[in-house]
Length: 225
Image 1 (cartoon, rainbow, N blue to C red):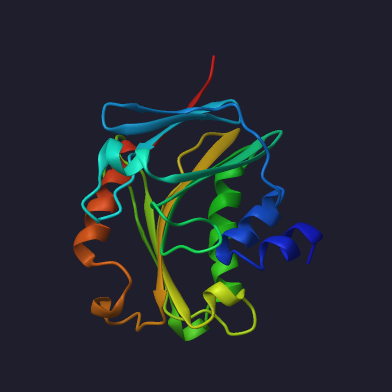
Image 2 (image 1 turned 30 degrees about the horizontal axis):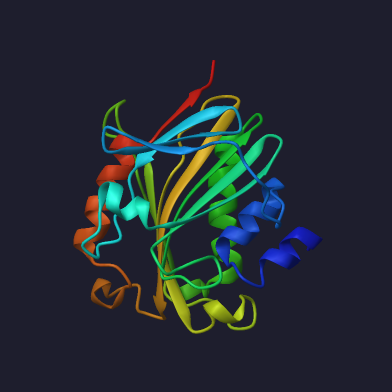
């Protein structure tokens, strides 16, 4: 285990494994990309690319610009890789029940590595019989392939204290090309649950469906000129 993963794993679970594998440092660095709102989407420049994604929706009555205005935003960056995390009001990396993130990296096969590391990281921290992956292919060129990750119970002693006795649901899309990709994910964290009983999950099926459609249809990656 490298030192970057050892540092991150005390506060983050699956995302820490992905960051360490792709070389994003644990310490937060200043980043130049501002976040703006355009046509009901969030737009930010990351690692030489422009990322467009749905505005956050915390399902708490705040949506669109209101959900972003009061959110807690954190950035971490190094040459060729950048992470933006968005948390609901009152939440942060030290304690959250929802996390919305974009992780851009620039190198050959970046998209494949994002997908591989997402799968392998959950397999390391989730109980094997409480883990499920479901990928829905893009129905047309205007949509992104999307993956639903369901971890009903993290492995005790492997994750940090904030994840002990917890489970997580994640939606993730990874648009990209031959030289770059961005992983955009929305995560919900709550008490351990049964993956076979969606009624016990930390997010409702209705919210999952709505966020999934938004991520599929609104997420884009474009190289800056």
